[in-house]
Length: 307
Image (cartoon, rainbow, N blue to C red; front, side):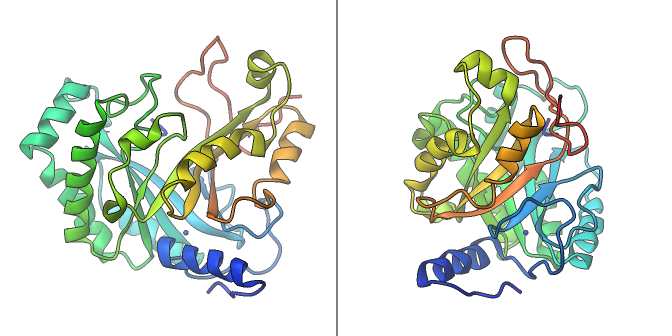
């Protein structure tokens, strides 16, 4: 399993975009000084960074966490909160509705039926009770990439109404326990995602996932794709709901030139993306095999350049 004090300056549109991020994600504290690893640009940036590559990078404003809602040591969230506060970062918590242990519970049927019966209400409340006491601003990303049919997640590919019912139930429980938490609905960004949209009142932000694998590009479309090539259509699908959009997972792997071209674009994608308010890098090796024999790409900073 793949188991955030801004100074508002510039044009009114820029100020509106920055204000949306402050309100929606709850960022507290701008990076100062030179970035150690973050790409160039002004778009707020964060990372899932279990290896600590960005630990001293004051340009990062989002600390991304992944955790399941079963068999997890919840006090670790308090440690993550302390780590984030020391670095003036907000937290984005991706909560995956399964367990880290192998079990018959890890099936789509058990999850869907269990949510409907209320069997997982206590799991959700236990996590959100902890989120409620954290001092960092928190965004919750529950059951992401639900429209993806690759088979990675037991909550993806459901009948849309079943997913919407589950999302509304779980995130409403969390809002009751932790009223200050922001809710991110986070499809992969594929065609048909709108069928899974749970409604404006249940969503504060929309996330998408954007990955660039040069070898796959050349196999799939016979050319290298840019960050905007991959991100653009996903952004347009996400932006239709009128919510702030975040690239909640970003990864790139390929030649030095390919990686550099993505790095130089992710925080400055150009005009036409006024609702894009943040980018979060996935600084880890892939855990679910890509199709056509491309295996497990390594998105980590020290390994993503392959030539």
